[in-house]
Amino acid sequence: MALVHLNQSNFETEVLHSDVPVIVDFWASWCGPCRMLGPIFEELSEQYEGKLKFAKLSTEEEPELASQFAITGIPAMLIFKGGEEATRIVGALPKPLLKQKIDTLLAQL
Image (cartoon, rainbow, N blue to C red; front, side, top):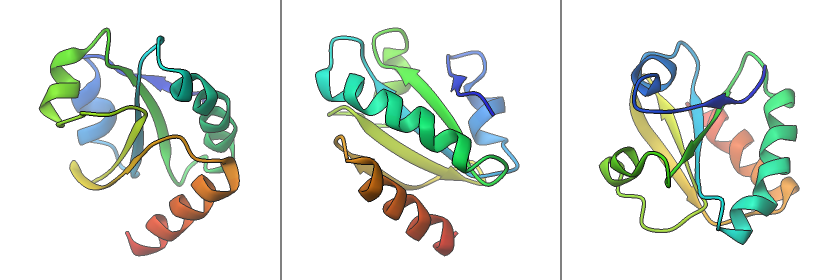
């Protein structure tokens, strides 16, 4: 499954009405840690196909959505289940640690 790029018009359908949990990476092109996290996020999206949808939202292009979810620091990854925020992970993490956090969260959902 390819990464879903979110905007105001598809956020509700792709995230709030998704049949599977969704992890949304709030990022910006000027953010160094966001750029470091990008390839890791993309690699993990392939490992969780069918179990977790991976989506990216540019805080530069969609400041209203970032504000709506009180994003004050990036990168920030919010996990949604059933249209509600289940948890958030703030900051860039190495791949093994991010995978461990995702596995733990999925086990709880």
